Image (cartoon, rainbow, N blue to C red; front, side):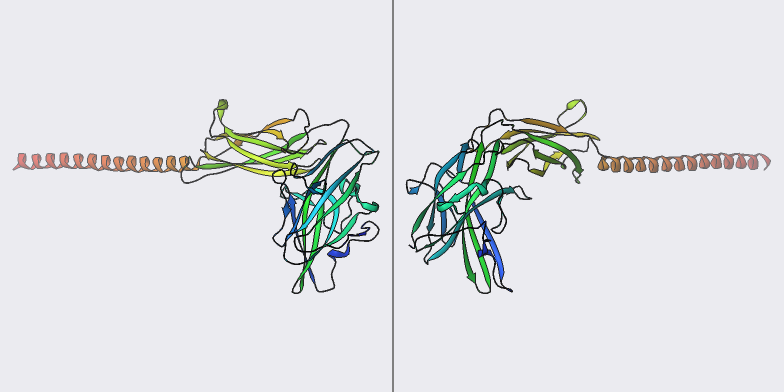
Length: 357
């Protein structure tokens, strides 16, 4: 194992992600988020974990701190080469965000961190460490989290990444493994998770009682605490009569300031003309997260008017059949009346002929 080489990523751009013209850069990121003590690793032999006293800290799967403005925290990050060849890796920190699909994501290597990732430095005050590891070797990387004196209260999220750039033909692949980092700055915590909008639609089936109601809701984390949520959706009708079962959905963690659009499908809804789709939300926090006090709840509903086409078609067909039957009976009655009149006239004619014979 070679000694680590330190460089400054804020004064010198992180060039490991940049390759010569005509060579493609492919990024892959694995973020540690499993059970306590779990490693974050990839299939090619990079692993990372929180450390304590020079070894893996089995009690945690993330870095999570409760800090005051201006406070500095020291910690350790362990990197291991679990592959069969030597690995040259770069370790650095960056900020977290929620991707469009809601997943916890980290900035790419050439993007500048401005929040929790910017607060992390390694020995010597640098923000990047380069290490070469032989197969099976590991390296403990000490680092410090320095909270600015003017840091806003609440949760600040980032991650510490170990990056390995390896050639694959004409393609350079940047494999990145990361451990989440959360810093909760003391102050006025304001958990806030709202349903800012709701829209609903109905899709019928040939079986009129097998329709689906879709609820599209927009969620916003309006507070300063990272939270997920559990939602329960149901469709009711006139007078609040339940028209469906309960549909439960788990919303992954949303970072402060993030928003997300979620579509919930409630099955087994008949076209009862007036539908009242409803959704209730209860905020949650991850098991490894710091407590945040009383968590918010929210409810929204919408009104939906549905044309029961199956019943309309049945009514139209029934009306058509009744009309055909009535017309047929009317024609039969007219023919019967005409036939009776004809037979009576014939009888009178024959009677006259017999009387004059």
